[in-house]
Length: 326
Image (cartoon, rainbow, N blue to C red; front, side, top):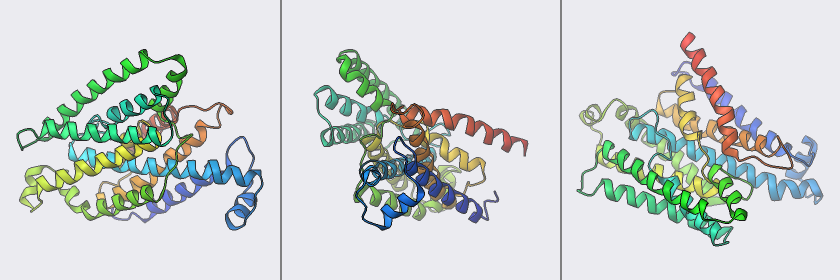
């Protein structure tokens, strides 16, 4: 793709988003035709298919799309903030803090809103802890932030292992599913849609500064970018997006790391293009992966994080080999 002519890529990703959503709504143990889907959307039917759509598939599909969009957006921001191509939304220990909160709730027999709140509180605690340690002397660097995040993440990992080894057999499976990503009980509301739209708008607003920052802080500062303010905005924005995504679906790996790289290999290096494309591709990718996770060995379900890796790794290798040949 020519980065100066992004319309073909936008058209492709919009088509992919629509296709992935339709595929998710029509796939499952209960057969639903396109005509039944349309009659449900534009009518008031109350049959089994309508209940499955309204109570299970539509909420789960929307949760998957928003989660994928938030993780991809956070991945773009983290890779610019840390100037590290291996950076992903979980690199600063946010998922570890959320996991400890969620697993503690499961261990106590709590679920639903309690589990979501515990995961979000754990993520916020990790955000405050990492930034507080990295900013101890009022001046933090990318290296200090990254090292602090890695250490805190390792600490959360130790706590997670303790929780898993001391839990009963009944709780361990629920814990493992959450750790690998689970959308079976996920629900989203207007606040989640609003956060994704706000993140997309905010990302586009600072996209020019991101284009400059990716070339180095000295270059950005010489061109008038307020580095300190921008880094704070990027850190807390990416952290909030990640915390929200983890609260919705658990620790779904791979999306935030690989989606931005896929798009860059396709030519979308300008952040004015990369940010909206990442949201579209990230959301579509997770919707498609979740659809396969609940249908491949139905009625059993696979953790969606397993499918994101199975689909994403060969796809990325194919794109990488194709790009190198060109």
